[in-house]
Length: 146
Image 1 (tube, rainbow, N blue to C red):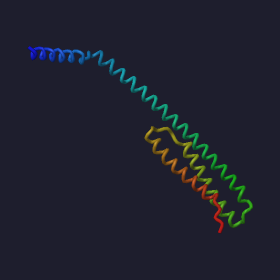
Image 2 (image 1 turned 30 degrees about the vertical axis):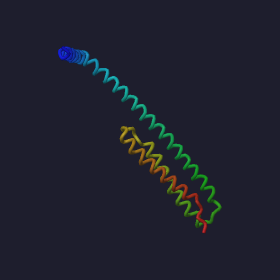
Image 3 (image 1 turned 60 degrees about the horizontal axis):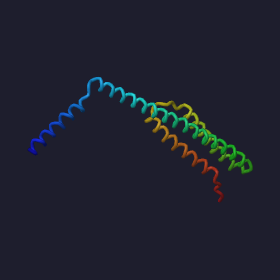
């Protein structure tokens, strides 16, 4: 008797699962449309975040480039009282750094949004180059008096 009740309960469970698990074609279409809408919303959100990151990074690098230009002006004013031989060397180094600074500004201005993967690569390389230029500015301002 107990076995027959268990078999009947198991059959009812299986039939119930099959009935509730089956979707009609219209339900499948509705589910697919809902998934597409959700995926589009996620994509739109990701694009907004990507464009916000690009804009934020552009602003940040513009500030760093402006700070570099200000450092160049300050250093030019500071070396006016140095010896001519030392001044010539500094002027050459400053001109090189100013050219690199201008190239970095142009590189950032010419960047076109081409997708998140390319942006990640560009941002890493650009940040590295900016850090290297920052180190060069710091090295320039240290006086090596012997």
